[in-house]
Length: 87
Image (cartoon, rainbow, N blue to C red; front, side, top):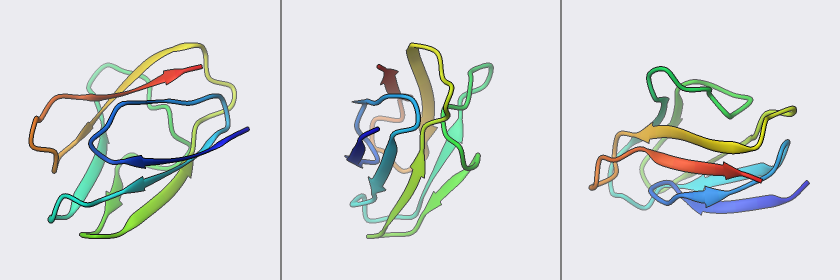
């Protein structure tokens, strides 16, 4: 298992059970939320709140099938779903 540190507004790659720390540098509070009709890939939440200028850590579920897992982040300027790709 690996540890990842990711900007909350970026897509990223991870593996089953990996730890991820999301960093919020957006200047506002964030919430990571489940995209309607998709599988939630994280052990915690949804939602996962992230205060301004702070970070939170969670893990990808284990087991988690290989694939792309979209989720929404309400504070990102582009407003498009973010994706974690496993593996």
